[in-house]
Length: 225
Image 1: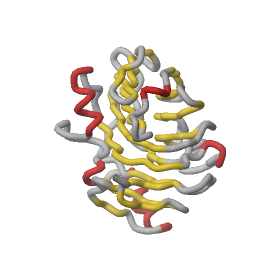
Image 2: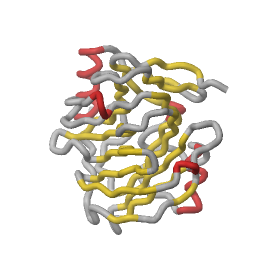
Image 3: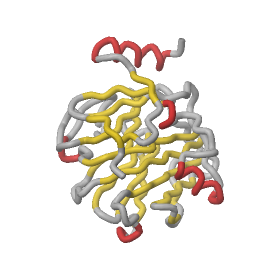
């Protein structure tokens, strides 16, 4: 068994079993500002990532900074980080380096949900971000870098160290669903498909077969229709 799997099983033994479920139609609700409420996701991957795409959907009324997706290793806290610093501004970090994307908040859907996909490829360093299927100007960072596989994915908090050092003022408050991750950067024509989480088989994270651990005050509920 790989080291990452052993580590996650060790964590599960300390603080509860790992659940694996099809979460279609379900949301994680983060009801209040907290310095400990979060969800740990288990990756279906044991190799370094030279490319990746992350998609998720969230609903919040926060205007302060908050973390959406945090992947940390023992060597680096912001190995991959999706962070919203203020309305109309999202940042992507890879290997501790950050690029910022700006967009009009009126790109949000009329339901209030915001759907985002971020991708990065090592060969060119090109990072791309889509907000509700609208592509933003591409940026570049960490060309030639390889993202370590020996890490931890956390929703709801930003990891300032491996699995911890959370800041309540950067915590997510709201609802989150449809978290997917691939080990490649899809072509632009594929991105609408990737946003739906269908047809493109997720290779790293699959909301339809998700292994997760809830920590603190996080509630799993059906999505409101």
